Image (cartoon, rainbow, N blue to C red):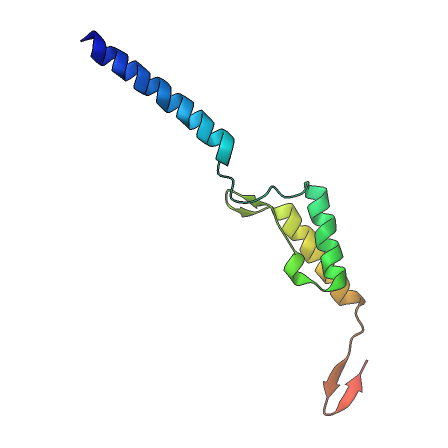
Amino acid sequence: MLSWIMLLLVLIALTVIGTWVWGSIFGRGEVMHPLDEPENVRENNRAAIRKGCFDQVKFEVVPRGYRQDQVDDLLTQLEEELSSAPKRSKVEGKEVN
């Protein structure tokens, strides 16, 4: 009976030590690198919009989607860019300013 108890204690100790060693070597399994601070994310998004590189736009992910303040800031930036762009449209082959 004592040998079974010792065997269980040794197995539990090996499991704990093995899990710790495995985590030390291979990490905890983070899939993505952490994003920049929220202000840096906003500034990077603004710079990407100014350059026209929509691929570089990033948002922090929260439990129910993206951070609303970052999305609102990006939409405000897009609105400013669109309102400052020259307004031109072609109507029957003529440019209207």
